Length: 470
Image (tube, rainbow, N blue to C red; front, side, top):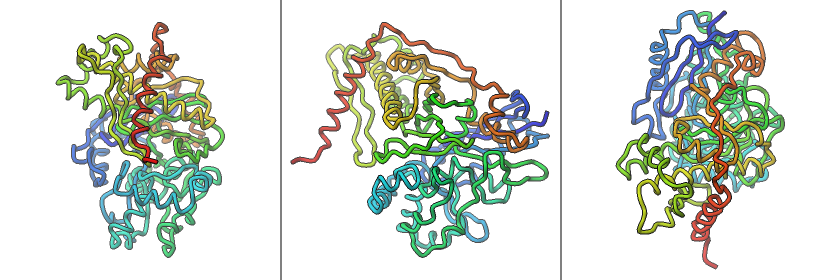
């Protein structure tokens, strides 16, 4: 009964789980919040990720006797090392407004269709390739020192194993790895710098059960991205959909075929098990709720009660979250306000707007030919809201499954066990019986189509104001 340690290094905190590799029984866990300056900054010191991992492991009891470790971390990002393996500058993470012009230039260089065919996705400013283009433009001295290009999980795995490796899931979020061809595309990096020997800068891509190496007899697994870790931790099957209401909202599933969407709405990523992971970047629900709770002078728990205390439909008040895309950047709207407006109606409208935005992301997956008729999982910080659970179930007209625990850390544990035992991750996840979750049923008396139609009309009203004059 060897023990494995799964690590979730998210934007807000590091969580670890200590589990039995054979059956997934939880023996201990630890969680350490990240400093506020780390949470809010695009530039982050990776040493703080490492310290949080060490502290979370200590909180879990020190994790003595662990036979294998795997790290799942926030993505995409950029960590650059020099020839001595030293950090050249802070890591660059998240959506990056400074890199937006660089992303646009890269897309224009090939065209959206060619990008989708080459690497499964149309790059945005969050992609590693766009951050590299920004670095070359903004910090040429730092760019000139690059000997290795990693993502956040790659760097933590490098600290553990001393090997520059990655997995197919995290590689697929860089903008220069092909899920269809299962290989790096250094020719795409030549759009950033045609003179650099890019092949020598890229980590080795490990297979789903392959280990990066060992640290004092402890097997170090390849690691992966957070969405891929969650897919393993939920034992996700094709047709299932995950709504992650964490700091960087996302909606995704797994399938057997690659997704290549030239519209850019769906990112065609790979997962950590050998399948593919189509993903839509969604709303940062936690920040949205936090903002409106502050505006109303209540905490998140009270905000949830306000929303639950208002009538379904919010008496015609409609909230549309901010539009923040590749081509537009506009504030959201709160419409339908009358003299009888109350904090309860505002809270209900915000919750319904959030649910409609999430369902739009599910529709985007469907439009990209991704099957979405299985279980709908709701996870992340925002998933604790009973108002959001009920609204999403009712407006989506389907049950919602709310799993317990940190499924990203659990998925990292699955990967650690797979590397230790030499078994496919899907086989390990099945043995761990991970699909248990609390079910939230829809309210069938809710007129979902009417509420979603009002939301669409308000959203289209915003879009029309952004159209250039004739």
